[in-house]
Image (cartoon, rainbow, N blue to C red; front, top):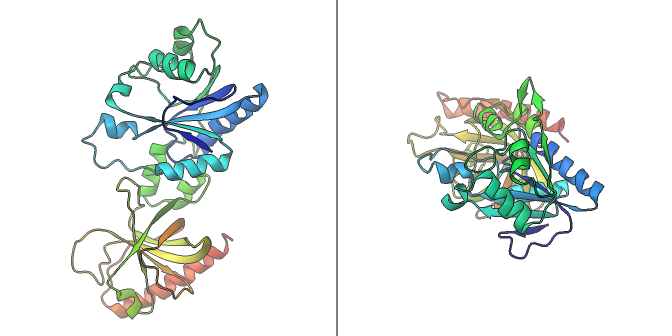
Length: 312
């Protein structure tokens, strides 16, 4: 995949362009991207995805500190590449860029810098500061061009349109199963293994403490999860706890992400690991003793293994 951070050297034959933030690259986005790929094939051109970074809501509402995203830029790039997208344009989203009207954006970027004749976008995407970038508006402001525009309707699940906003909320509600259905893949995050308090090791459940570098990356709600853990390109089974560890912790230092990797004994300090969320088992519970915690962890492990065997 070729990634362009500006359009100075952009040169693509017959670009069929799709524009959006594409956070999550979920099945609704995939519907749009597959159409972009198929249209490119029909006209003998190439599919091009145009996205923005930082996320517009971060720039337009800097006081909103709690916006969490489904993907980092690197994760989004990987997901797009897996779909077969060969060209990704990442436009810097600034206050100046945000002031462009839909017509100015289309003329300056889509027609001008990219020389595109084909444009695909989704039901909830709005171009420009006027947010009037519907097909009629676009046609009106580029009536002297050959631009063909196709707007696709959103996909429905349980009578509700699939959107990044909805998936974020579902993850924060702990409904991993439905989030994964809407994403079209298992939700994942990556981080570095850092030093922990080693309490899990003392009760037979050693954990790797994961530090997620990007503070905007969405971490699902607290609880215990069945997960797949990627270490050195190998996927292993594990169970994950997100939360405060109330049975063994008497501080409120913040949330921790700790994974017990089954049948794995090596230390992982400072290594990068990836986690795939398969299912959520239960809420985090404060037990009256370490022994009761250990008994529950044995039950959790058995339940995780049962779930993970079904996901091979």
